[in-house]
Image (cartoon, rainbow, N blue to C red; front, side):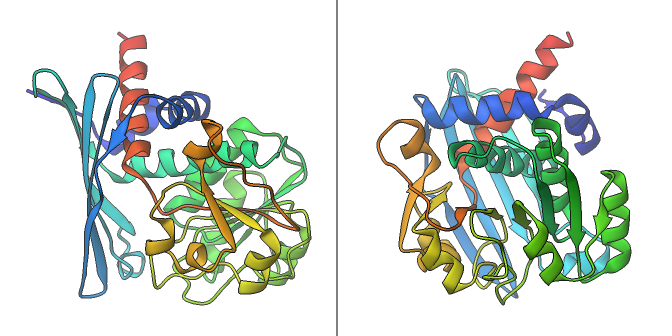
Length: 292
């Protein structure tokens, strides 16, 4: 029988440093991923993802349901399985939402480091949903910030999230862009929310994906020069990545196979990759073993 974990148990097991460490090991190590299979229907997106390494196969079936926040349900829902790659035994089964939140934010933290971020300044988060919450949890757990700003089209949610991290609600999107040194866009917007109002030299993390989401303006992308991405198919799935002058993956940079020299803006675009799910499963397994 596989070990069945709840989302709350996953949250209790993981820490920012543990998950980021595994993301770096998996992306830089001897691991493989299968081409992602996906479809769109009735406004939602469903993907099946698989990766293998360190003695494990990991399979995730996950969907993005844009109408769910209005229903009081998670935007992202699915199931994650960890399988012994030698015996085929299913070792762990858990909801996909929490591991996805952790691994996406962990990859963003790694991307910031690769882009040269060392901490400090103001962290601005656009959005107040699941991804916004995990990015705040991971980034504030790893880096020291002078302040936190949150902006959302739903002020009550922004207020609640900002309060949890000792921050405040931005008076508007413009204030957040002008005041932040690190900007995390975690939205379902179909129009760019990060524009040239953002200060040159700022770090921009965009996790709203796939199409038709647009989070970064053409002007910002052009001035970024190179955009760091998590997946080699980012340009196929994201309009933001497709409009970038040049992209390089986290894996390529970690392995020394490519450089991503930033311009006026230091930009990372996430669309998700099965290797990150493998990293999450391995981190959870390590945490379980350490607790006996």
